[in-house]
Image (tube, rainbow, N blue to C red; front, top):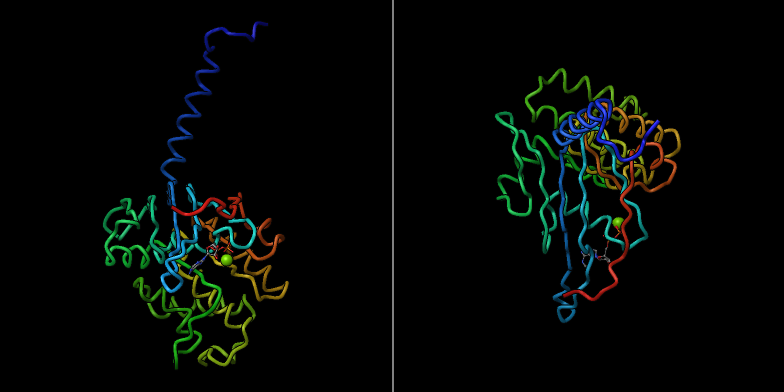
Length: 264
Ligand code: ADP
Ligand code: MG
């Protein structure tokens, strides 16, 4: 049979059509679109020395994906994550997030958005799980974990129920739930931070070494929670401390390299 340069048969055409439908669907699934990101730190206290950290990073993340940032220390992983949260300004580039504020979905470019818009995006669309819990004095563990759901308008009882479920799965003893976590161990605080960061299943989720100080059992629970967030449709970008967790939770990797050329 001739399989050479003939015009496409109907079968080929059908395949192409399916592909373009699939592409369109996937386009609709894009939640985060970062293009041409450059970032250079200026050390004003040291004669204005310039330290290039990002040199043209592109990244697109769809619902249900988890992209792991990999690369040696100093390759810009943490810087990229902070830029994606709008914490660091970029020198060049765009960071677009598909934001639904409850009225309509639209693209918001964090590099040009007002402070108010960035806050709105963070309230309903963009979550960030840092490495350390920011302890709020006198607020109980249960309230710290439930708070993001309450802020979204969930009923108190539902928010507390989901918080209890997460704390239980993360092996935080029930006797600690009514206490403020200021005196808890590093590992306990990190698990509370993860529970708080994952409770609202943000549509776009940034994870900065969420398992760094956990034992194997709790690491496995966190990996499971991340898998559940993906299934629920979160688009995730993360830095993962250990390769085993990364292999388990990530659908692909973005390899970063230290910027070698001098900053301009
Ligand atoms: P990674 O997380 O991959 O280890 P970083 O994003 O922390 O890399 O750092 C990338 C580069 O930017 C490094 O050269 C680092 O020294 C520099 N850098 C990071 N944060 C700052 C900062 N706040 N001020 C100045 N330089 C920084
Ligand atoms: Mg880092």
